[in-house]
Picture 1 (cartoon, rainbow, N blue to C red):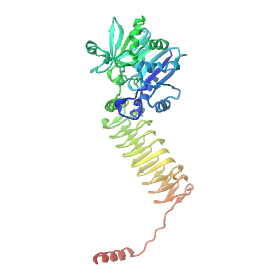
Picture 2: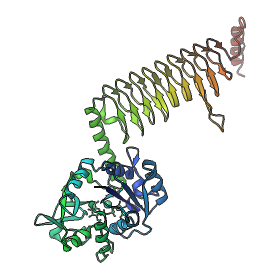
Picture 3: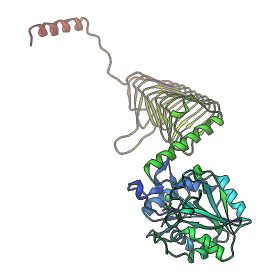
Picture 4: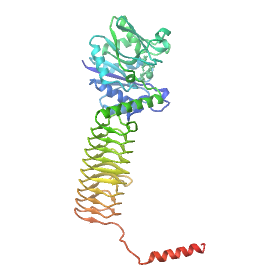
Length: 447
Ligand code: UD1
Ligand code: CA
């Protein structure tokens, strides 16, 4: 059966104390909303509707960056979770299939859990995702009766007896789409909060003779983020899982607790990641590489056998081919470095192509920016760039060409040539001795 996702993200998130809408706060380099969308994507949804309110334009931008085909629904006043889902009705009038409600501030639901909900839908009209809470706090409580989920009671409206129950509502609900909206039409706001509660649809459905059940998951999956402290705990939880998963994938983390992954980091087996390495979004690393201590990588690809760092920075568009070496205090941005090339010390390589086996000397800089435009530097194969060469782009250095140390290269260097672009050296015989004598004498006179 086709599935439509409805992801709620209109709330302001008062407790975040932020100008940014709550669902755009990031975990592992991606907004919480994107984590929720990624979970839901496992069901291969035919449609995804995002309900936004506070900062709707920013929420839309983030959602479309992950999936350009999402439908946005605006909830201009936040009157409760049922009211939020109701805003998705127009987008789904012609939709036949199941609707699954997810919260944009609940980032860790596993695909397997959603699959279990889909399976439970085969036997029940409504499926709610619940969990046994160690500290049930202010969560809504799931009330069971005769093997059915009978109703959900919100904390604010619950009795002491109900509060003593530990089976809680995660907020994730699945039902046939038109059934869901018909139930939501019947929800009122006659409760302590004066809100339209999505949770009320269970009682209404049972009164209509529909069936309802609970699929249970681990509490860590349904973690909802409401404050900065909870965001930091969620980040820690993500990192702990990512480190473990990476080790299981055969990656050697020498000090796992000091390595930070992004939501989409991919690292091949037998790669060594030394302490204090940070991966930003969109990094893929092939097997058998070494990422040395204190390196920072984002938006880059590192091929087999490459060695990066210590203290290297790979920025978006850095493409390292097999057996490339990038050493300490080297920054590489939007540049392809071909197999076996070396950039070992103190260099900036931006908007460049470096041919196979070329050696880039210490302190080399591709001067790619003229203050307005960015320009490209092309270096051929087997070239040797002398230390402290300034390559003023656009410029090309041919195959097997050389540049003299300290050169400022502004014109193309043909293949096989040596370019020397610096002042010629002159030695003045005995000059240093005479100068020192003069200076020391001046010091003695106290002037
Ligand atoms: C909700 C559930 C509660 C459950 C808990 C799990 C209801 C009435 N209560 O409570 O049973 O245990 O989640 O975390 O559903 N939102 C909107 N528009 C609104 C209101 C909320 O889009 O008008 C969105 C929020 O942005 C958020 C989500 O819905 O992503 C949950 O809202 P929140 O106010 O945090 O619900 P809780 O009070 O935590
Ligand atoms: Ca919440």
